[in-house]
Amino acid sequence: MSVITTRIGGFPVQDEQALVHRAQDGDKEAFAELYEAFFDRVYRYLLVRIGNRVEAEDMTQQVFLKAYKSVPSYRWRGVPFSAWLFRIAHNLVVDFFRRESKRPAVPLDESIAVADDDPQDTVERRMDVERVMAASQELTAAQREVISLRFAGGLAIAETARVMGKSEGAIKALQHSAIAALRRTLLAEESNDKG
Amino acid sequence: MTKDKRFDSILDNCLERLLSGEESVEQCLDRYPEYSAELEPLLRTALVTQQVASIEPSRDFRARARYRLRSEMTTVRKSSWRSFLTWQPRWAVVVAAVLAVLIAGSGTVMAADSSMPGNPLYPVKLATENVRLSLTSSDVAKAELYATLANRRVAEIAHAVEKNKAKHVQRVTERLNEHLARMARLSLTAERAPAAVPEKTAGQEPSVSDEPSTEKDLPESTTAAERPAATSDAARSAAPAPEAIAWQKERARLQVLLGHYAVNHPEKLRELLTKAPPSARPAILRAISVSVATYRKALEELGQQETEPPPNNDRPQSRGQGENSPANGTAPQTWPHSIPAPEGGLRQQPAESPTGQQAPRLQPFSSAKPDLTLP
Image (cartoon, rainbow over all chains, first blue to last red):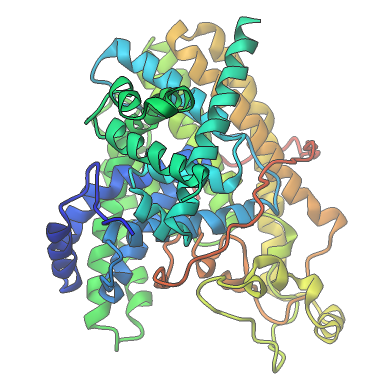
């Protein structure tokens, strides 16, 4: 089992634990720090996983409210806060698809904001994001979950395994098959565009 | 370790280094020359996929979410040390309602109501709308409010087009789409009808569990069609409750309003498309398609009343039974009341098929002009 560490916008493990303990003691500022650190990552994960901005926004808010209410019951037990938080998000996603499969889908607005530090990069970045999000529609639910957690949520393999309730080996295999499937779809789309 | 497992681990090792910026694709391939042919295409695809990490929440959403969390944190804290005061939530709502009424009567808010994007009072207008939304509980009433707000946004888009303000057009169309999207997620079907029989039947108390942790708690298992026949029979023989009649009227009024907007809004937006600055046109085009689809869906749900009579529940439909209820933790407009148990509470992934939409049918609507004032 590899060591669980938080990456991309997370904290060193000790700092994260200290913040969580303060939040559990009712320190709002500590929770606000955790919120700021994970907000973008949770939103990204939900957006890539669901593909709908409005739903992702609503669910992001739900994740943090649920987390705020249940943080007193959180216990470390080797599960970092990030994995615990993303599991709340994962459960909401599962409920969402369960619900959506029973009612007609409505085409919704999908305007997605990306980092706009450089205008030239922004255009290309947005195109890549749109291509990846479109291609990810062709993945299985588990493959898409892995891609969303790893690439959008910025979780490590061990954390992804915790969130999805699978072994690290299974997640690595899923990650491999997901990237291979994405590649096939992206190539097919490119050849369609050229043809 | 099998060859496949070894390759999966090597790929993951390269990905970790690549995504953290520690190594380039070439450096990784140099470390594993025997796998380079297989690794390279996957790593190149991973680099493209990594762009999803550049997705950012909009400023507007970030601000809204922060505000909402802060408000909730205050409420949760208060309720935790005053939890013995069981009347507290109702008391809080009453105070909020009184404040909203007082605010609504003030000159500033009345002036803000007619303000347009770019006007200093415009944020007051949006804030007042949010207060009204938070004080509206039923899905039908909420849908009516969203439709009315959508109508406001269309008027604001027209104003922005007239002033040649492309940025304002884009922002307001985003808000319009958001209102419509939220309206689309409300449940307007007759399944949510209030009781025809006011009395409760013993033993028929619906489950009020906070989360649908098992299949039995899923919304469809609590529909009237699956309730015991005895309850339905008893209900059918009873006269409709005043609550049910009022609800029917509310739905009828909403149907008229949406029927009007289903035609009026896309038409108005199409008109504006020709006059709008070129950079604002894609946003208007998107708003047209969203409005057409959303109104159709809503009217379709409202139209079900004609062919599918409301169920005869043994008590007014609990929020805990509907798809949008806070009880299942998925309500779009209300915060969940329950605490999730993510540690060990992992849900199984269901088959994912949100598509398969049937061709929506536009319902007939009255030509009567709806009342355009905010409820």
